[in-house]
Length: 153
Image 1 (tube, rainbow, N blue to C red):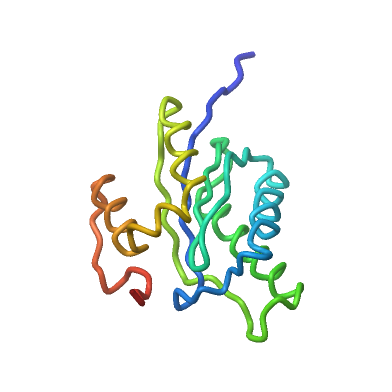
Image 2 (image 1 turned 90 degrees about the vertical axis):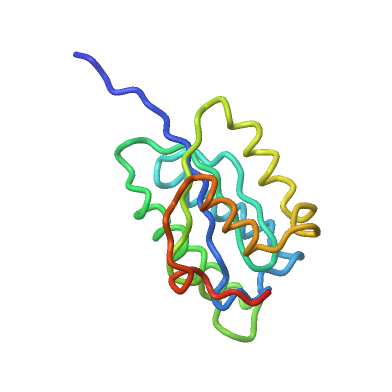
């Protein structure tokens, strides 16, 4: 009997509610490890998780049995609960509604990995809004700006 063999590479972008810079540098890497654990627990392949104080890029190898929206929901729900349970913030942490999801070919893995790895350096030169709009344009995704994330820059 023939099997199904595939690997789908998706970059998610999730944003802190109201684009606040709540992901503090001193515990950010712990959150990123936790997100990687969520992905592994769902039977998927975390490639890299990294970001800055107000948003996170998550690069994943997905199996076709996992819906993109289900993994985004699980990452956001479980990581919010984790952050709140740690008591790192005085207020309640949450992610903004929605997310970005962008697909890549196997040949692009290293380039996307390096891009995500260097987020802090990247955002010294470019705002999140500029970065996100460029992704939408690059992937030719039609959008209405009133339904995008809250922009604070």
